[in-house]
Image (cartoon, rainbow, N blue to C red; front, side, top):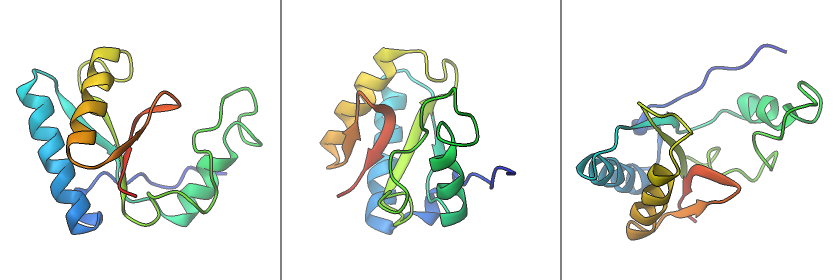
Length: 120
């Protein structure tokens, strides 16, 4: 199965989520980090693919997503953010991301998915 494309364009999010994410990115930059959007909206085809990782495609890896149809990426209300310099390795970045996300009314899925913020 070929991996469907990943979308990182913030304009694909619902406007009130996009505005919050833009504020989070600016706040993270003010803290000295280098945030970037790994993924914003997700197609159903991509969701199916990611759900299969760790279950059928790469059975030695943990699941990339925990739900098939319930992801808020599908509803344009979730975003994954990492640091351009350290990727997924700097826990200081992710702790700060959680704080900044909560200030904007977004929920973190930490510790299961530190990079993920969503609007419920």
